[in-house]
Length: 159
Ligand code: MG
Image 1: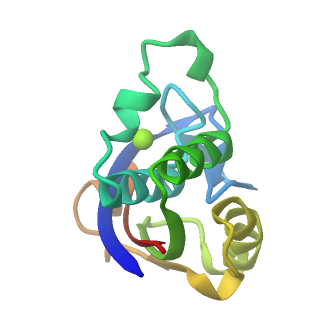
Image 2: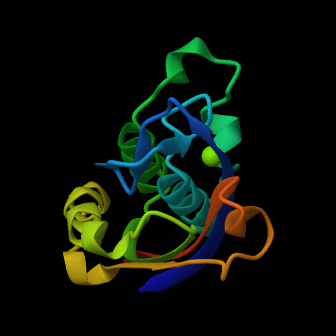
């Protein structure tokens, strides 16, 4: 069995009048993440970790923000496409782990729902999907609630 690991990072601004979508789950909040797609920062970091593990170009290459097809796109659709792309190279997902950094709202109650969305897309059990959330202790742009960022690692495997 062959293994590869990959790392992904993403950041999006928070803005009023936007839905907050994280890990494929809509969360009730006064602001949402701003972007061409639904700006799901957690899934974008995860996509880049998977693409990076397979040595493929990043999410911006595959889903450019200049392409009207991806305007308002559900990032779960992008993740599904990423899994298909790495599958074309002979890879399947082993496990993933994501850290979301965001000041508000409280993310922990939503993590089980995120795992239920993500695990079947990746073709793994929910125990192979790590999701953690932390605040930034009120420091920097995250602390001022100007944005949120996410870090992800992914292990992919091939027989
Ligand atoms: Mg992004």
